[in-house]
Length: 260
Image (cartoon, rainbow, N blue to C red; front, side, top):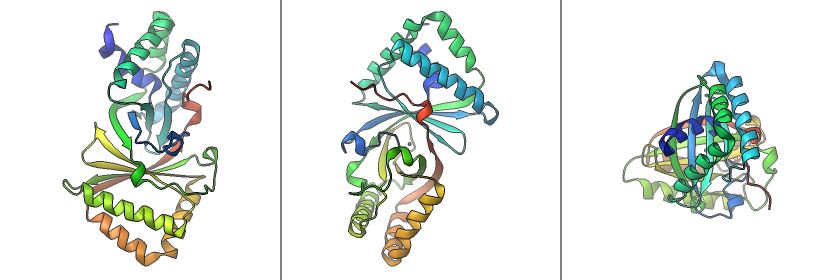
């Protein structure tokens, strides 16, 4: 095994996978960077892949991988492993730590782990996104605790080139609208920085389940229909295309920070 190039593609399979049990709000509203590994699993291999990932989690615990990650799965069999990083230079530290983790477990454990995940996925992608606190909305009073909001709604907005400022202006108007009506459900906005079609933003919202999510958003729309329609129209003219995904946060596949 020689260097980062031979280690990382398999590690993407092992510990791979837009919110997090620690959401952007829990990260103190800073413009946090996230390294995202997106793994597309073969539908017939989901059970094998998740068993494999849990084996990897046990080895993370046993051999002390120092970097946490959080996992979301969407209904189209995409698994998103999300790693908080301080800056782009942190990627070198992450890759180095993974290499040291592999060395600690030894070649026999590593080869067994690789074998347990063979043939389970179609392909993987890497990207980096940044949480945008100025475009996100956090209600003063949350209706549900994070553990009660496992349903995740993701809308990927691909913006017309040159329309980024106009898009962000409209999103800020939406945040002001939510604050004014004191809407109890929040959302986070992330911008793509690398590995995505550019320009790209991700809208992320959570709820107890799909029924609760759609009911709560219908509530806001129906109470303020005229203003909501105006904001939607202003947003749509800046957008080249959208991609909506729904899924869940997977605490059972995640590797959160250790309590000090």
